[in-house]
Length: 113
Image (tube, rainbow, N blue to C red; front, side, top):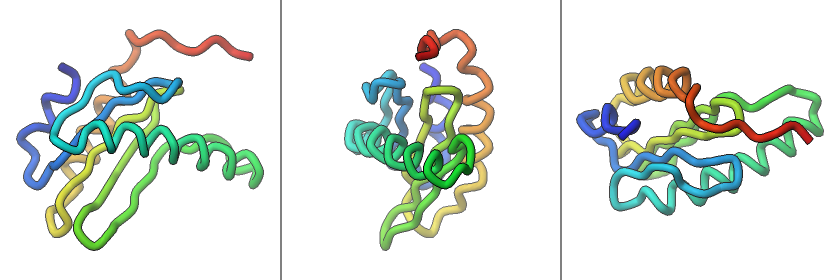
């Protein structure tokens, strides 16, 4: 599985690889399905906001809540994300996400509209 390298990262609660249509390709952790669904939704909203601002493509997303930090990166139409328990360092997870994003060359890409 592509996300296996994130299993050993301290504090990781859930990971998801989401397709362009919002369906999970791969999940890890109890919150994996919820993370995948919400990342797909966030991606749609952030892409719309980015277009309206003329800001280009969204390539990274991060937010912190009271208990969790979520970091996600995009690779083409795909989104990779991880939820880490607050207080844990997210740098290793971010590095692994970036590396995984570069390795998504074998997934089918959406046809241009």
